[in-house]
Structures are given as C-alpha cells and as structure tokens.
Length: 235
Length: 250
Ligand SMILES: Nc1ncnc2c1ncn2[C@@H]1O[C@H](COP(=O)(O)OP(=O)(O)OP(=O)(O)O)[C@@H](O)[C@H]1O
Ligand SMILES: [Mg+2]
Image: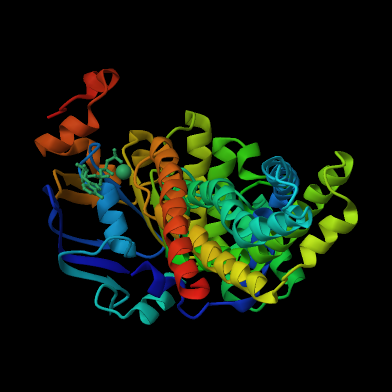
C-alpha cells in the first residue's frame, strides 16, 4: 500500500532531485569510511585464514589469492557489507522518518499538499540503489587490496602468486551477480527501514523501537533474498 | 467560510466527535475551546483532512472537502496553512529553507524571489537574522514564529492553529496570539485556533466554540463568555480560583 504512494508521480522534479543528492551524500558518502576500514580488515583476515589452512604443500599458493577474490566478491562485499549498511543506514532512515512522524513534520507536509510518502521515501530508495553498488565495488577493491598487502607483508605468498590467483578463472559474471544482489539489498534496506519509520506512532521511545525493527527486519530480508538470488543465479 | 456539518468521528475504542456543526468566518479568529481530551485536536485534524470523518461534511467556501478526490483535495490544501503544536519545522532545513519550502514545492518563482518572499514573511513575524539557524538552535517561541512565517508564505485563505501558545511564557504567548490576530485581519484569512488558554480567549477571540465531551456545547462571541449561564462552560471559564470573586456573577 505504502509503495503505491511512494511511486506516485512526483509533484516537482527539482525538489526530488535535490533530496536525492542530499541522500546520496548522507547515506552513501558518509558510509565510505566504514566501508573502507571494514573491507580492508576482512580482506586481510580472509587471506590469513586461507593461508593458515594451506599447510599441504601440494596445494598451490595462488589459491590464497583465488579464495580472497572469490570470498570478497561473492559474499563479503555484497552481503556482509549490506548487512552493515542495514545497521548504519537503515537505523538512520527509520529514525529520521520516525522522528518526522512523531513531531508532526509529516502531517505538515501533507497539509501543504505534498505526498509525504513519496517525497521522503523515494529519494532514499533511489539514492541507496545508486550508491550502494558503488560502495560495494570500492569494498571489493579495498578488500582484495587488504589481502594483498597482508600476504606480501607476511611473506605467505609472493605477489606474483597472489595476482595469478586473483586472475585465475576470473569470470565477470560473479561481479554482476554481486551487483544484482547489492541493488536488491539496497532496495530492501531503504524501503523496509522507511516503512518502519513512516508507521511510527508515539514518541521518542517508539522511534528507537522502529529503528531497531528496521535493522532486524531488513537484515533478515537480506539473508533471505541472498539465499533466493544465489539459488536463482548461481545454481 | 469554513463549515462543518454534522460531523462525527470514532476511533475503535471510543467516539470522539458527536454530530458537531460549526461555522468559521473569514477575517475572524475563530476559537475552539474545551478541556484536554474533549476532541479539539481531532476536530481540527478532521477539518484539514488528516483524519477521515465518519459522517458529515466539511465545506471550504461551499466546496465539500471530504468527498473530494485526492487531486482536488490537494488544490484546497494549497490554500490551507497549519500551525502545529510543536511547530513541526523540518529539522534538516534552516529557518529560511523552511519558509521557502512551500514556495519551492508549489510555485515556479526563482530562488531570489523565493528568498525575498521568505524574508518578507520572517520580517512580518519579527524574526530577522535567524535565517541560517537550524530549528534545533532556536527557542520554542521562535519556532512558533517560523512556523507562522512558513504558513503564510503561500498566502493561505485558511489558517489552522493547534494550541499556538502552549508551552510559552505569558508574554511570548501574547506576542504569538497578537501576530495570528493581525495576520488574520490583514490578509482576511479564515483562522481556526484550538486553545484552552483564557488569556487568548479574551484577548484575541472573535467567535468561540466550546467543545465538551466531543459535542458542541456552546458557541458565541468571546465577550459574552464571562456572562454565560451554561454550567459546563462556567466551570471551564472559572476554573482558576483567582477568578472566584467574579464567579457566577448572576
Ligand atoms: N489516533 C487516535 N486513536 C484513538 N484515539 C484517539 C486518537 N486521537 C485522539 N484520540 C482520543 O480522542 C480524544 C480527544 O483527543 P484530542 O487530542 O482531540 O483532545 P484535545 O481536546 O485536543 O486535548 P488537548 O487539549 O489535551 O490537546 C482523546 O480521548 C484521545 O484519547
Ligand atoms: Mg489537542
């Protein structure tokens, strides 16, 4: 029901455009730091763990690079990062819209004749769907970079081997698969969180509750759709 | 003129408005008074369409508002200004942007024209130099004034105020009241004000509607309210013990 109102024809394009730009800034650019830090460490840890498992000298060392690449691109960057963004961005969206609801700002928009559902939610969905893939691509590069750095620093594998592993059996399809997942997850994060925010009733306490619900529900949805999309695309 | 005709409104657990009929006149401050919980806010929200009425009609200058389609309603809403109890300013926008917002949304003015209009409105409510501040950085009284400026930016024909001076000191409350009164007369707006403040009633009220347990109990000009012989209204008017010596003159 809410979705019908969200995708109604916008009143004034320029105002929406301004909102989208603002959301890209607050939802996307402000998440860049955490994306980089987390991805760097995760890439490094995956590399170390793989290396420590490869005691058997028969297994070629380039597998370390290969595994790092596969884990980062297939699962870590799209799914784990989306879960982290669900926590960061989802709670933000829910509490922002929830606060607007309980302080009558949404009523004020309605009185002015603005379709509040569309005006508040659509820019957030569009911004998330545009910016999250960008964050995920950054995460892939940084994560693999982190793995490389740790591999070279600890002399576990030579840069040549690592690089060979990265390119070994590299198919562009896994990147597309990751990006498709990301776009779906971005839509889930923005819409589920906005829904919980929009239907907040009460006061500050309820806003907090809505934002918790937003994070929990969007995380569960992400995990569920992760399963479904993987089943559809990879098997 | 705004008319409510026989409107009723129930929530699942209770009936709040019972067959209320009332008229509000242009260029006048029309007050709605009543005890806390009597249904004033619900009445106001029904009038502006934030709540659906169960029965009855709401008419804005003869146009039946509650039976309209969404698009037509929107046209009328552009003629409505509303002042919320907490101001309901947009947190993410500065004072100036708040006042410019309805202009950006519904007019094709240039940025300069919008800013000039916003400044005229802010001037009108005696708020200069606060343009760049955010709502979290200004006082409650200032918020109310910004909200008034935002409401009059698009020159509304109808203005609804839900307890415009609750939570303000008596002096500031008076300033806000007088401001609403002046604007009402100046632009010939049909103004509806919810209040339970006796000062406002005597100070700025033109007509007064007394709501008691969701029913219209009494309506009349504000200067006759002190002489009322309606017992419930007397209880309301003379609730403060300092007025005891005037209590029930007759
Ligand atoms: N959304 C709602 N759902 C259920 N009941 C409601 C709702 N809104 C208001 N009520 C009930 O309607 C009654 C009237 O509420 P209303 O807010 O109109 O009172 P009021 O006259 O504005 O009081 P106050 O002066 O304290 O603001 C109250 O008993 C309230 O519990
Ligand atoms: Mg009220």
